[in-house]
Every structure is written in C-alpha cells, then in structure tokens.
Length: 380
Image (cartoon, rainbow, N blue to C red; front, side, top):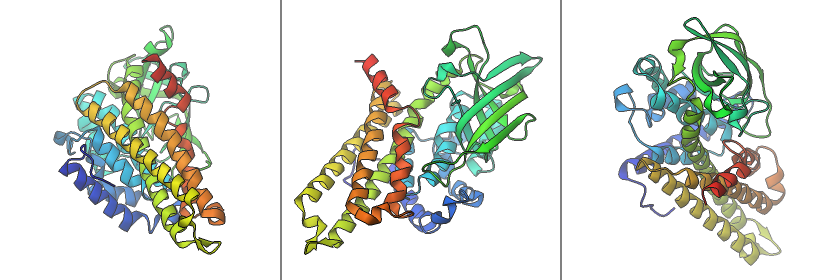
C-alpha cells in the first residue's frame, strides 16, 4: 500500500500496532471462535492495550482521536479475515460508544466511559427492528414517561453484541404523536434490568464469531438518568453517528478485500494450470489488477470522507458514497477471489470462503446500498 497523505505518524503507529496484534494474537486463534464467539478475555486484552480508547476523550482515559483513526483501526481488524471478530470490536468502539462520548452527560460519562475503555463494560446499539431497518423513523419500540423515568416496550432485531453487552444504547419512541423522526430518544439500558432480555441468538450466513441477538423489552423501567442527550432528539443522534458507523464498517471491508486479494495473488502465482501459473493468464491478471484499482479508489474515498469529518465538515453525501461504493466493491472483490481459488475457494473454513460470506453484509448493514444511493440523489 502506498503512503496516504491522510495518514499521520500517530495513525501510522496505530496501523502498525493493530496489524502486529492481529497477526500475532488473532489470526492464529480466531478459527475456534467461529463456533463460540470471541472470548471476553481477548476483548479485555485489547482494552488493556488501549485499542478501545482511540475515540474517547483524554479526560476519560482515551486518546481522543477522530474518524480517520476509526477507519485505520477497522481496516487492520478487517485484515484478520474474521469478520465476526472485527465487528464485535467495532460495534463497541465505533457504533455504540460514540452515543455516550458525543451526546451523554458528564455524569453518564463518568459512570460508564472508564469501564468501556478498560473493557469492563461492553456495549451494543439497538436501533433495528423487525419492521424498521434503514427506515429508522418507522420504529415501534416505545418508552413512555412514568414518574422519574420511562417504561420501555418493544423488540429489537439483528443486534450485534446484543447477547453479551453489559450496556445497550436503545432507541425508542418517546412521543407517539410527533412525526416519526421527531419523537425518538436514546436510552442506556443495563443488561440486568428487569424485563430486558436477549430472547434468542440468531444464526447468520457470515460473521459466525459475532453474537447477534433479538432483544425484547417488556415493561422495562429506565430511570431518567439513563436518557442519553435530550428527549426526542434520538433520530438526530442516530443520523449523526451513522456517518461514523458507515466509515468504520467500510474500513473493515477495505481491510478484508485487500487481504483477500493478497491471498488470491499468492494463490494464482503458485497454482499451475495448462502448464503455467494462473498469473500468466492475462484475463486473470487484468481482473486482479482492476480489483486493486477499485480497492485503492475506495480507500482514498473513505479516507477523504473521514478527514472531512475530522475537519468538522458535513460529509453526509460523501459518506453515503463510501457506503454505496465500498459496500458493493468488497462483494465484487470476494467474488473474484473465490473464483480464482477454484475449488479451494468453495471449501468451508478457507479464508476467502469465510470472507465471501462475511462481506455480503457490507452492502446491507448500516444502510443498504439502495438507501445510500437515494441519500446521494437527494444531494445532487
């Protein structure tokens, strides 16, 4: 990879440290996690090394970096080739924690952030419902005022870390009369709260080492002190954090696609057919080269969007372009990687076969490609 103008010495150090950790501590062990999930001690170890504090302000025990740090970190996690491991970490660091760091009160930050940085408090974000995925405003989970708190009822679906999180940031409708996007709030719900449960673990095509659950809330009482930010401002918070979420997930996809292409190049240079290595076939060389062009283009687009956010700019259109382009691109890359591995690409538990399944979610989760294209079109 050529050096990018967006990568400072600090970000280069994060890349180097994350890559070394992934290669030494994750890759040799992660196959066992595909059936049982990422062990908590692994997450605790990553926290002790400072990986969970990249985006947390220094006064709360973090490093206080920006969106570019998230992309670089996610990219290196993606190179592990175990998407379930990568997303387990990123949901905590980049999908859930920012709700507290960006919108929480000082009391809430003092209560929970130190534990999030040290790994004692693992987090999840619960927005999606059976009938409300990308259409956030259509959610039906409610939180009605009662005394000095709220009573929550509803169901959340496809929640990564939902069954293992200690604290879940839950989006719920607090104003049943207001227009869909104007009556939603965010609450921090602790795992042992009465009436709150992970009703079932969900089996998935990919991301086998990540926990994905359906969450049920039955008359769950949440104190007002657990309301994150202002009441009825939750839709704004979700839309704001979507920008960071999409960049992090696409950062993971960049790392996955780059590593898959590297494995494929190595394979076709050593696998002979009709008397010579597959690499000697122009059709294969050219398609591999084209996929590298697309990865490089996606990386620069992603870095630029993250850089704009770090400059305080509104990058909504560009982030939507990142999500649409990279989400589709990683699927094209993995299609070719499996194709060029031939029969080995179809064998379960090989890296490219696993990645092929894992990256399919890239064009769906965090905002489907079709939704992203509509967001772009609105801004043209």
